[in-house]
Length: 457
Image (cartoon, rainbow, N blue to C red; front, side):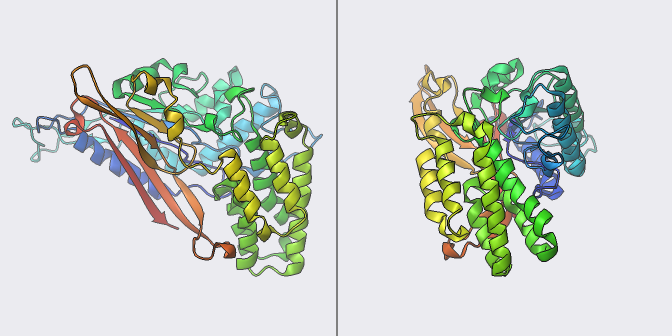
């Protein structure tokens, strides 16, 4: 049995909060139930499965959303950003610092993953002589669990080569109980022989999906380099609540400051101006303070657009993502937050950043075209989905269905209410989703299951 999850976005608590430990406990309980179900075979007999593989499909740890990037100012020793030299000691030191904070902040949740891999949680009843579940015995069978880590656009740092990053990965592996070696965590299955064999067994083709998002993946640098989305996330999304608290913390309510910190959980990222506008309204922030906050936003926008890194990504004679953000931020500097809605929608449509499906990309995968894979799995969008792609008959004239999946997210999600969206009301809830795939005659011959649940805040 192969289980795939993604987009946990475990942060260090300085920008937003991750999903609760209760979700991890629920996940562990569901895995045990899945293991029992998978042990029922096509001939209706019960034979315990041999092992479970869990694939973490990117954006698991999230060093990007942390105020620790702001501990040093430009020119000070140790100042770095994700687009700094990734081979510098200061860069590696910052990643190690934030990673350790993430591991510590999420220690209880992470321990559940480690307990899974160390055989403490998944023990199921053996079979009796009639091929049924043996009920009248205390014996339990240990089902080995292997956990594999692939990177996405928020945790791409763990894909970087070098001894110092090997040591950072060693800490992650030990804490999460991963089966990965200390070498760079793969971004593509082709970088891991173990994943290639695993995908072959289950007829799965899986990747995080950031390669299809022009804001969050630059093919020039590949996955060993930063992207425009990194810069926007840090200099605008993560920094605005930090700057507001630093400059105006004594004049604003703690409730508003806390609500502003949750901006990192808003999806898609480009609607963050609407989130700010909504929080100003719902917290009854005085107009005089609103104007100060707007001034901070405008100053951050100017600094962002003046970044040498942002300029380096601007392609001449082509309207690209940099130009789109220029339009958004320069326009927002001239108007109030609440009038930005239309231009945000236009930018999302132009660059497909609002796309909640990668199904059209699945049609271009070589594994789809040569029919070596049945199931195409992506993360990144935070929108769980199942999309039928094609159906054909194999050499034995048996029907084969090809399908596209998205793993969704494990996240506290703030969604814009559809009733009177102009009032910019966002409703929070936690989402937990996963996919499970089966081989041979597991699960009575079924090939997959998809599950999505929500927990109220």
